[in-house]
Length: 282
Length: 346
Ligand SMILES: Cc1cc2nc3c(=O)[nH]c(=O)nc-3n(C[C@H](O)[C@H](O)[C@H](O)COP(=O)(O)OP(=O)(O)OC[C@H]3O[C@@H](n4cnc5c(N)ncnc54)[C@H](O)[C@@H]3O)c2cc1C
Ligand code: SF4
Ligand code: SF4
Ligand code: FES
Image (cartoon, rainbow over all chains, first blue to last red; front, top):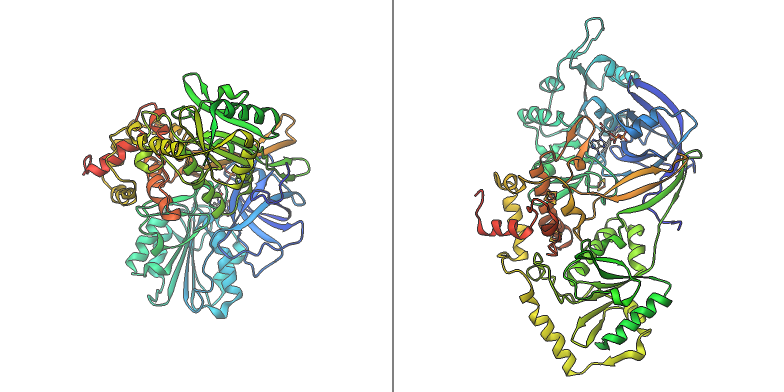
């Protein structure tokens, strides 16, 4: 029997733009067929669905301040859904459920210094907040953006990144883990944690916002610890396996001695103070 | 409370099977075990069973359930909710309590109609436990009897069943047996009381813990060196203890295409936190890689996290996991006793 109140029925969205960012990552611009807006907050994600393949959680990488009603997803081809999406063309439709989860606290961050730390694909959710902040520049104090990739060709959003580098009101540093000899690279060579000591952190004012591959968090947190940045001034966006996005399927649970958290509802953005006691979090 | 003679009760069930548009389900013998299955005749109904292989959750959250149908050419998707109205006979109190816990999960998160509609369209006829499996510790968990969660509740009092009515749905169902119902007197009430008084003797006597201590004990033992590793050492990560548990509800969602590859269904299927890939993501990252961590997670869910969220201990003591675990390491009584005794690893 057909159902009108399903939590699992995606809405159709059309691919209206597509751009290659790296050899395995593409940026997709999407528009709901019914003309509605996504109405997301920076840091939230959607369940992207392709009929016959499945669903995958993907961060919204565009800022709600830009380009609406369309929204952008930055997708790396790693598995079934993401590879299928990469094979699709402008004009074709996908399914979208969401937005889901708790995003970055853009309001709470107002009036403060921000330190963005992005590793690899972690730039996708951070870019949403970075552009939100840049579009409300006067509401925020100093802005620092650290962005690390494995190698130069994996750096994404080059136009935006070079704009950060040009702007006087942004401190920006980029790094790559290594740079092949024949490639010209003006940034730092080394892991992203090497960039943290060089940032001017005001312990009363600075909020760090971190997203990257799972292995990155521990090392970044160690560096921030050295700087003595208070834990409640650190926000982390975490990835987990997700099969529903709505707190039911159980896959995204992060367990601790007292309670568990759901990355899809309590997160994916977490305050470090809140999760540091959870053994499985970092 | 009402009473109905056993022969009249059988007639009532047979009439439902014959005339009621709803599917009539009941506990029946299956090989040398018991299972909830569609009833062909009241004769097959076994209200004296000890425990069923699977709990009745399969009727509200089926092993495979279609959520969405799609056509890959047009990209068109339609939501689906296959609701089969059912009358289910013979649910033991611990399973009724587990269903009430599941109701909270599916109501309070997002009001999941794929589950809730199936619940609304079902009539639950409980039965007090005449027999208990050797593994059951429902009495310890306080789930050997229940005052709620049923539409009707039967108690075997010899040549009759005492019938308690728990809801409007229950009394409506009973309407159809109205002419065969007897009023009850002191004698029947006394028999039901005796039945319940004798219940504790049916259960194993080795549990040493009190269920209300479990949240505290589990938190204390969460980080205990070696405790989970030792208990999980022989675990096969088969997930059986999840599948058979009346309070486990985690699921996977996957697309299955028909042979033409143009039509297909998005299915919700049972999943289990004991399976190795449950928390695995791309890049070979697994957030619960060690079997000891998965084993611990299952216990934390049963005795601590659900309690935090809903105030329920999510182990109802049915003993199914204990019985069906091949290496025989899933018995919650064993783990909870170790904690209570403070032995093993401390
Ligand atoms: C909140 C959130 C935001 C995210 N944002 C983005 C984003 O912006 N961009 C982006 O590209 N990605 C993002 N991801 C990651 C993305 O959702 C996953 O990589 C997802 O798995 C991709 O789906 P898929 O169907 O393509 O991959 P899958 O087919 O699920 O495969 C992914 C990987 O997992 C492995 N795998 C899958 N299933 C199993 C299994 N049962 N057992 C063992 N291994 C298995 C595969 O081998 C493969 O390496 C995000 C994830 C989360 C949780
Ligand atoms: S505890 Fe037993 S039933 Fe559960 S996964 Fe391990 S081996 Fe399987
Ligand atoms: S944990 Fe085991 S004994 Fe407890 S409810 Fe689940 S299957 Fe039954
Ligand atoms: S993704 Fe299903 S519970 Fe979080």
